[in-house]
Amino acid sequence: MEQFASAVGPVTVILSVLNGIAHLDTIGARFGAEQVLGGKAVIIASLDGDGRVIMHAPLHELSFGEISGGFSDRTHALSAVFDGCGFDAPARTCGTSSPN
Image (tube, rainbow, N blue to C red; front, side):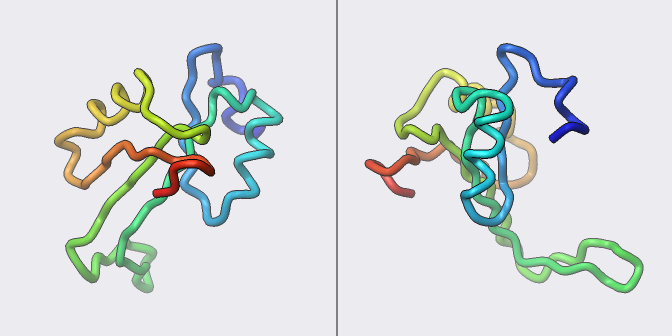
């Protein structure tokens, strides 16, 4: 987190796609929970002996959303940024009341 801390400003959105969910609290405590979106990446790939990513299937999706659930201006804006980038990146409703 310290490596990117200087790049985080008052309107920065931090989209975390790490395994698990415990890190969301840690990131939220450091930068403010309102700046954190949850995410999930689905990709079937591995690294070859030279460290290159080898795709094993055409499945590649990044879904994300507000931790508290629902859609927001920023999830719609982020979805628009990802539109046409070569992988599926839908905004989803997240949170305890509206699971993926």
